[in-house]
Image 1 (cartoon, rainbow, N blue to C red):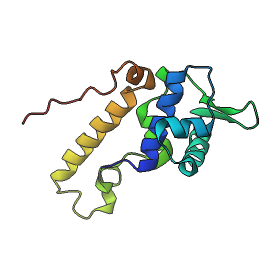
Image 2: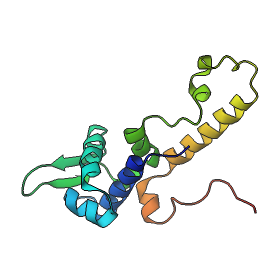
Image 3: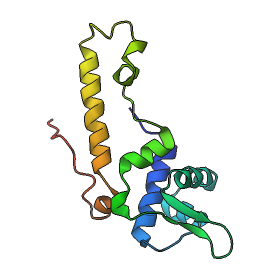
Image 4: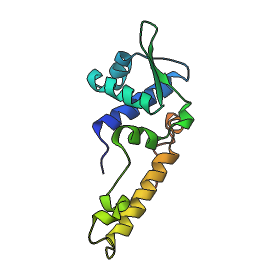
Length: 144
């Protein structure tokens, strides 16, 4: 599974807003420049994040974008799903009736377990943790 570039940009934008402070606002041009996000993408992303209740966008000379909630109240899962929709490793993990093999498939259990762990990890990771550097801890230990 790979999140879209748009979801990655959304995470960068929300992390930037979390870094500048809870009541601070930034223009989309400033966010785009600081986080290397194409301005054309950012306008759509901000609109989607505002619709999801993650950011507030205000137009005008004193306008800008700010977080709608505290960073510890915003999960990584919420941002990914606001942009990409529900996390899905394989269609059979959420819609078993779509696969004619679902009743006898031993792989489906693995997909469901992996998806549940990924969703839980993303849901438990919030932007306050990422600001402190605690959001990037691997859930499993990798061995060479």
